[in-house]
Image 1 (tube, rainbow, N blue to C red):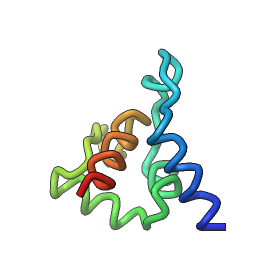
Image 2 (cartoon, rainbow, N blue to C red):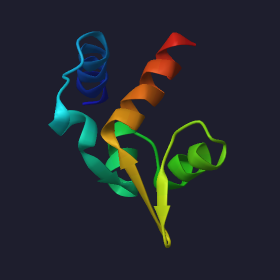
Image 3 (cartoon, rainbow, N blue to C red):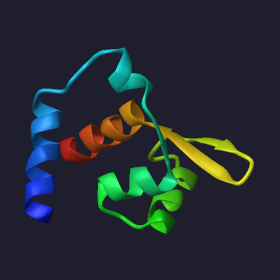
Length: 78
């Protein structure tokens, strides 16, 4: 299953889908963590380390899908 997810991520990184719907999609912490294949705690750690951009509203974090994709692009270039 992880191999399939990884291949889909690689496909998205190579040929990203653009458009207003893609860049404006807003994810909560659980959705972003699930997409990245990491725990919610690790995701918060990445936010605190300023490795991924998030908006905090009260006690909740919100992520633009484009921010998550930019994080993946940066990670794959390292």
